[in-house]
Length: 283
Ligand code: NDP
Image (cartoon, rainbow, N blue to C red; front, side):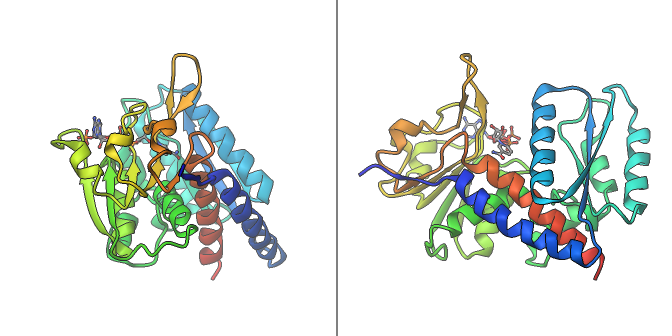
């Protein structure tokens, strides 16, 4: 039987309706949740991600402020802007759209954001808090993935979760979040020998690589849950995931599509984190 499609789009709609009510409550208490987004340069993909984030903020009543700077700014200038936003009590969340131009050290920039305003959850302090099970901002894409799997009402404890990809923003943290939920977690990456032998043991397979259709039915166990994080632009202009959707849906029990899968959940968790930041800064 073909897999059920897990619509991140629909889940995001439900969650955002709930978040809009929380924003309303905060506003009644005199707090206007505010996100400041910094965009450096004019990379088209970054521009469209930023636009989508701002639109999502507007839709649920979060104020968003966009600061754009030319690609040739120096690092110290950018750090000054962040320091200014750190001090601004009307700004609750700060997001620097990545990637940044080569002359700017991304880690340095992330470390400059005040941890209590780091709504992307990338600050090393927040990553450490996540790994040690403390309350913090969870990184948006991993958090969205966990939310999607939890929405399926499956018991994650004891399941074998295989994560393909080990980036700092998706692969590594998503594995940690499932470990926190008591899954047994295996990481695969570009040096993994015999990828299919490992992925085909997964009860839950999460793929975050950036290679179109890398994962086929040969890589997937019958009945597995497959979460496709990849977003790849094909020559015909269409978007495609890292999973061969038509092939894998014949063996999986649940599968996320691309687009309208993980992407909308990532933005939803950014909204969630901004509201959390506003609430906590006024407590
Ligand atoms: P990175 O390029 O930072 O990491 C890719 C990972 O894939 C690396 O760990 C790399 O291994 C691994 N890898 C590369 N080739 C193979 C292979 N043949 N077999 C197994 N592993 C391989 O990417 P990101 O994590 O930033 O993003 C991954 C994908 O997810 C991209 O398509 C990106 O656009 C998408 N994305 C989607 C989001 C959403 O909201 N939907 C949010 C963020 C990302 P190694 O470490 O050894 O190099």
